[in-house]
Length: 275
Image (tube, rainbow, N blue to C red; front, side, top):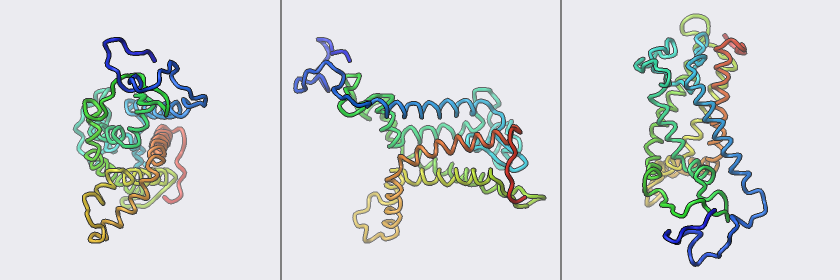
């Protein structure tokens, strides 16, 4: 990291009270390995999700009503049977995903998530990359100016994410009504995958720090609100593993989408248990 010029103000690692060390860090361990793994994980999901979102093929299995979460709710004019419940109002432009009305909210919910913020601040923004490793910039204003001030809207995206989780739950339930004849019942491996993904999405959403605040925030006396206190304690237990659930759901989303795509394309057949 280069030293500041004569006209640049002294701050951070260049403060007069800090030791004058030319090396970026004196650490001898592989401190860069953790941020590298996180960057690779983020990159893998972003590349896969972008490619699948723009592919606009193999997202729905009409026979079993399997709809990938990447296309739910499907509101484009080309959604066909995948959009029986939702109005088809989006144009079929190649750069507009079929679920374009909800995907931005889900993306912002993840981007403003407390865990993800800490993760990409260290890896992408490098603020700092690791303990005892200097930042590549002199100034850091925190979340008080654009664009990072947008992080303070996380609680509002949490509400939208809850609604979208309800929609994903609806998709998983409807997929069980795929037996012979109208109103029939059936399920296969795809149903279990869709259901497992929805459960993990709910766990991730409910373990959110904003959910913890919604359930127990602004209470002066927990003893006067026993129900909210109980809910708050349960959410707090989930919250301790919010980081784990954040990564698991990235995996379940890709796995669920890949399975639906393989069945929809005819590459594999769904393993049916009933119906």
